[in-house]
Image (cartoon, rainbow, N blue to C red; front, side):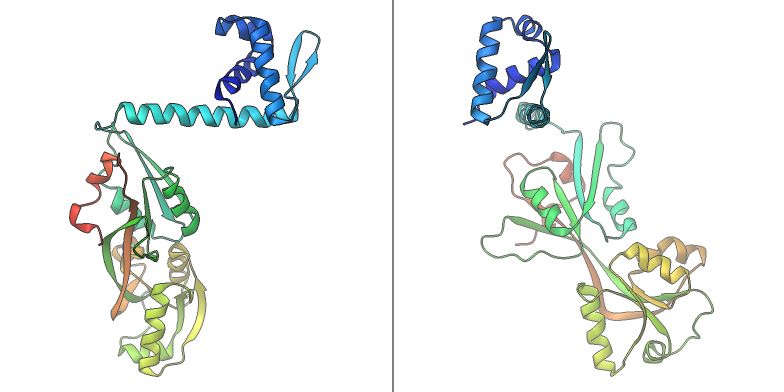
Amino acid sequence: MLNLHHLRLFRAVARDGTLTGAARALNISQSAVSTQVRALEAALGQDLFARSGRALILTEAGRIALDHAEEIFRTAEDLSATLRHAGTRRQALRVGALATLSRNFQMAFLAPLLGRADVEVVLRSGGQEDLLRGLEALSLDVVLTNLVPARDAASPYLLHRLDAQPVSLVGPPGQAAPGPLADLLAAHPLILPTPETSLRAGFDALLDRLDIVPRIAAEADDMAMLRLLARAGAGLAVLPPIVVRDELAAGQLVERARLDGIAEVFCAVTMRRRFPNPLLAEVLTPDEAAP
């Protein structure tokens, strides 16, 4: 097994560039440092240093080992700090957000924490699988998504339903004359979420009930792209009004019809932890957790 003491001595030598300097800094003998670095090299099966005069130069394997060593010790220091301050306020909230999620919704979720001098928000975006892996690896405190992950009795996730936004047909002013929903859907090109989204599934069911074959102008899995396409006049967009809140307020876009029975569900995903991040309590309420 990898010996962390050996790894610490290796890091000291790599930083100093000499056995003598590392030994002096660690207050142990040079021979002890040399012996334990050689033991680490034997354990890894690679030479970590090459000699250049009296200096020790990292080999390619040594540079890789140093990168990993730094990460290991950063993680250890984070663990110590977390447990040392358990029960007290932690100053950072690490949030993962689905890359296609509405930015307006994300800002609304983070609003209670933004602008506070004692809080740092770390926001990462990505695909759902990567974000949930980050949640399980404790590198994220919460994941924001509109794709509810599958759960069963063995699921590690806690689901918090945050909001259910109505969905509308939205387009530029003057693009479509007022009229019944069925006429709007049949007569105008549409900008739609991609078929794998839950929002699209509900919309396709609506078209089927109305016996309408749509004219699809564009499809996108990114709410920001749907918004831009709507602003460009490519067609009537199917999306939650919150996504285009600013454009609606400015009169750049108008809501043509509300799609009753269809909603975009936004949720937060967390995991049950012994030491949960206290900042979560400020953005989640106790009764939001799904059974």
